[in-house]
Length: 276
Image 1: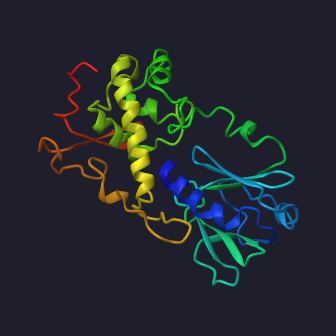
Image 2: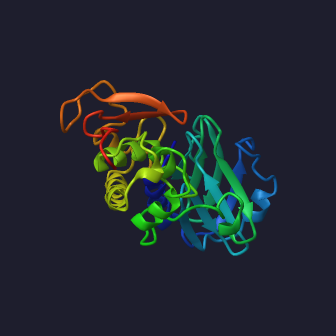
Image 3: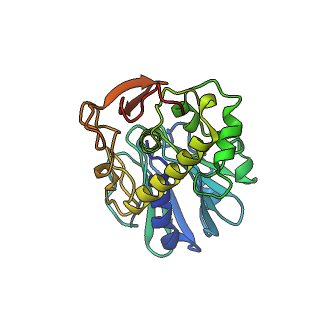
């Protein structure tokens, strides 16, 4: 699933290409995503201009004069910029064509993504209104995590992957951040000290920024707006490396299932017996 670095990379790719551009046509090849694409969408969007683009968590918001297009890429979605007369790709479901000759193409093999329209405040949409802070913003702090964790009964990994606590920290980056902070993923969130949350917050920010610098992580389907793969998969220290040796201490990395997610950690560097 595309996580914050992948969505941010796509945002940075499409923003200069379509901002202030007029939408000349909308072609819906397949209406059936996670929720059906509104049938009125071509009529509503055609003739409008993209006035602003925003990323909120794993959502992209394309704002026009009369409303906002809310896009979520689901498990396998991509947004790619192509010439308007391009040959349709397999699993290409929507084309938004602009007056500059480019088309923004939504491609999604598994069709778990979403393209929604709202004429109200998008941040108050039911999918967005309860989202936590952005991890790269100043209001994402150790104190925020520490205070929220007091009422939490889940593991630290499940806690930081909860979008109501903080947005965009998916499975890949949760694994990496906990390893960097030397926190066992099974540790109870409520048992982690403020000092350790300060370290974890710092590591989350650093790893996300580093991943964005490398264009995100490509494991299967993900590519950026120009069809280029990310390279952060070459920098991963624990995720996907189960059975290999820890880069720090050479202990064999262990894999478990936690909240239905693959979780990889170093039993030595992230010893559960160590006070967190």
